[in-house]
Image (cartoon, rainbow, N blue to C red):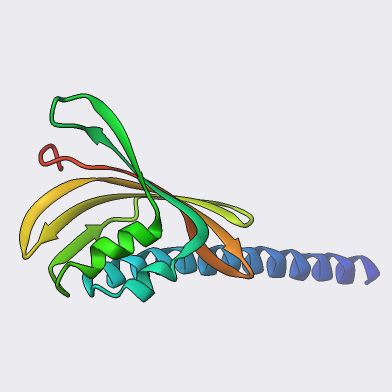
Length: 156
């Protein structure tokens, strides 16, 4: 009788740990997606306060692409620079539509890959991929780094 009880108790404990881990992963994924979606909602609504709230104080935003001469370049901005640009765009004009393609979590760090299409005033503007690096600070996910590509064709 003692052996069955120990096996039952062990099985119950294992199932609780596995279920708890699955719930944590789902909640972490949901929280990570929520902060990214919140940033794009702020962008679409020209809400600079909402946009800035999604980033750490030391966040970096970079774009990888080509200049007018076709030379590969990387440009760097801060979330504050991004917010200044967002402030000049009428609410509803910029609509970046993303797809969550890949999401990886290791403790308080996450990496997210999101292909996108950007529409401006309802017309296609550009496409590419966002690569997000997020960190969990004080139990809140924040964006630490974004590297994106931008192009006008080969969007599918």
